[in-house]
Length: 345
Image 1 (spheres, rainbow, N blue to C red):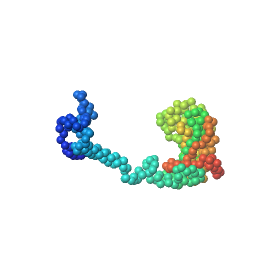
Image 2: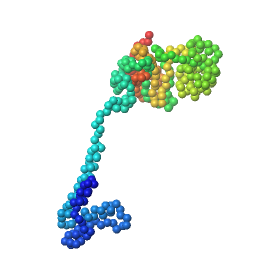
Image 3: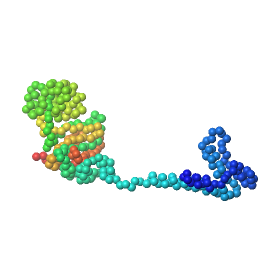
Image 4: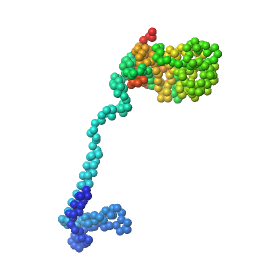
């Protein structure tokens, strides 16, 4: 641009300090005069600089046409430079993306190759029937260890209201496939009953003191009703871990042998979280398909039977099953509720 301006200036004829219009009355002309103020503003300085090139007369002359052509050349040069810069900036990058960056969904870019391969076995938005979903779940469970299988039910309830809370237990006919360590807080004659029923840890006030000291080597804690006043001091320790004895969960009972047998065989406690979703394990991936279906339908019936009284409208919103390291499979709600599970042997 500077070269163009320099060329335009060199082509202009010499301009005397006295304009020709003042010496020649035949020419009618006007001038852009500088500002009379002592501190010239930016527009005044600009016009003062180009004063000699803006003389306009009623009779065109060669010098005037030369000035106009030079000014237009400078303006054209500015426009060409700006246009080239805008076009270069607007051109998208032609370099194709490769690897995980080329995946259409951002959530898949952090997935492992194993996960990306097994999720191709199912359609993400398709609703499957129970038997087909369980079959796909077993195909997608291909890790080096035995994965747990889980059910996730989204319900139309809000647990912040007392009449819309859901907390209950379900007896899985085929078990959970896990070894459950049961601790019992009791005293008197019930200590011998707990030992005969197969409890792993039994104690009274001594066990309470051990728990306060950080002992948590158990999966379920069962307490007899007469021990609950003493167990109340463990609320801050056991509550966040989901181990606090509760009558709704079946862990506060006078029939301790029965409670121990149920939890050993596969009794599972579940509750709705603050978003209205129930998360519930119902077996292991190495179970036969028939056993998984029996356990799953037992969980569905339990959630249906324990429907909160404050739930209005459509109770079931969605249902998914998955393995602990695999993608979820969406189920058809109507077909799931009408499904006839095989009779457990």
